[in-house]
Image (tube, rainbow, N blue to C red; front, side, top):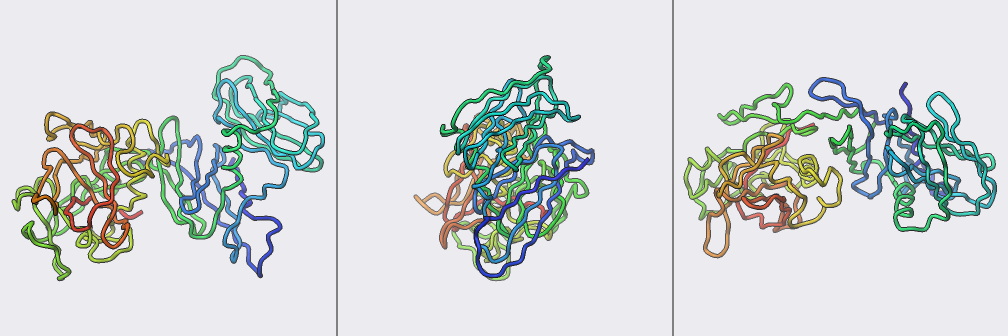
Amino acid sequence: MKTKLLLLILALGLILNAYSQNTIELTFSAINSAAYVQLDSIKVMNRTQGGDTVLYYPDTVLILDYQIGISEIKIDTKGFQVFQNYPNPMKDQTTITLYVPEKDNVRFQVTDIIGSSYVNIDMLLDKGYHSFQLKPGSGGIQFFAAYWKSAMSSIKIINSGNGSELISSLEYLGIAHSDSELKLVGAVENFSFNLGDKMLYIGCTDTIQSGILDTSEYSETHIFQFASNMPCPGTPTVEYEGQIYNTVQIFNQCWLKENLNVGTMISGDNIMEYNGVIEKYCYNNEQDSCIKYGGLYQWNEMMQYVTQEGVQGICPPGWHVPTDEEWKVLEGTVDSQFKVGNPEWDETGSRGFDAAISMKTTSGWMLNYNGTDLFGFSGLPGGARFLYNGVLFEGIGSDINLWSSTTQNIHFALDRGFGSSWPKIYRNNHSKYEGYSVRCLKNE
């Protein structure tokens, strides 16, 4: 049975000029290639305003209520509320925090999916945040409900443990004042949404994650893809400008499997110009380097002199130059430690744990510093065209730099780089005049 999580993202008591109320309904499902996959949870992150919330199976529908004319809308934090437990799913125990608007009696109930009651107690609580520790009985889905005056608030708890006890226990921990508890409460309270915010949805099943980037403007269905290291369904190859490129599906992203090689070669001594002709550099001015590693492009030429991120640029029709946020999703997908949405990927410089190893080819890197190519990205060390220290081309066999379509200012743009002996990926700002490789990403 489909259930819905209603996020009332309305700041109660905030009255501005006349407004109209609207609703966006987002439905989530998942597949592996074409086979249905059951989601454990869906994390919803607002990349524009910050903040996140989580849906837990079988809740797979998110309803966002918003009001036109209000620049910032937040969940009401003054009412009686039970916040989602952490961790969830739980195994041995979990922590639950609730907010009581004023001193009064609060009744607690813990039931299972068929309504059997495991906990039924009353407690007099002062105004403020209070924390409890719940120890599960047998495994399965449980519901925690709290009643204060005429108000009721409840959450769903997933118990992944194999406990044999039939009775759960609830222990009062006291006033919630630790940094972790307040951070958890704040994350729920401060989830804000405005029409057109950039959202990141992260679908989880077991320990695997798949990410979807979206600008939420209308109701729609999002399908998480959990297949990887296979040709993109329906698009195994792309023929473009006389060449055939293979494709690779890496969860929800479909990439060209090779660096782009399109255009007319010019000498590395020259600056690319806006002349109606796609121009490229080939390492050491040798055409064979472009055949093996792809062309090297200055940022403006790659973008075809448009500054808006995510444009087609020199990519095939139906494809585009990946944005900085899209690179972050890929990095979180392929890294074994830092997953999709982790703040690690927002840093500059060297980040992650082993994403570069997962993205490099299994041969062709200097000193045998090859990768596992675990997801089929097949990154080759094509080097780059530089502008300083008298060096024109450098890094073939040991390095790769790949542009994003996200600009920092008139002179610099964000790119990704990894080298032979380093397992992490670099996120840096480099001059738009340098010549880097280009990978194209299929439009969703």
